[in-house]
Length: 114
Length: 115
Image (cartoon, rainbow over all chains, first blue to last red):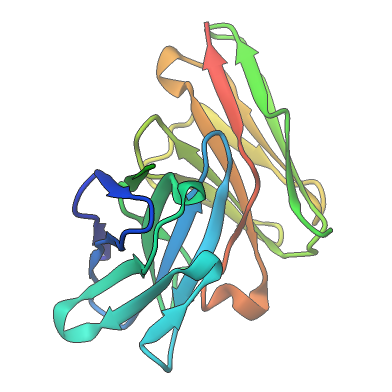
């Protein structure tokens, strides 16, 4: 079975500070990993994904994430927070084979303080 | 631009009154998904269509049904909405070429209120 744990339902950072949103997953087979962002009253937008290859993946808006198999983690980072980064962030996992379902974490709400 | 469109963005219905939410896509994707997202929770998959094949999640209530008359459109029908069905409903699509990588494209959602 697959599951995703996002540590910290709320994270606050100052504008210009490092953003670190944590995601740990559980999967019996090699997973695909995703980060989605959701702005208020909007749908989900794909930030970045890991499927195969390089474990450090870069996404939109300056975000990146690193797949660490030994730690079963896929933490999301951004060197310098911008006010426009304030949103809900969801980590998700799916299997590389078989069912095509996405399993989402419960989300982390990022607040950026001016 | 090609996209996933959900109508309406906001829907208000009465307790027990059937309601239909709509999703259309111009991506020509063969897979369409419906998710329910309650306040401060993760999106939860209700069901999906792979072409015309309907795949229901085991814990999706019978109150929720779906129709896909063609590739472009998919509907979510709630036969007798209860107060607990108030949520954001998200539609997403995926294509067979990307399905193994499960890249899904989401609409903006329909927020359903039940009075």
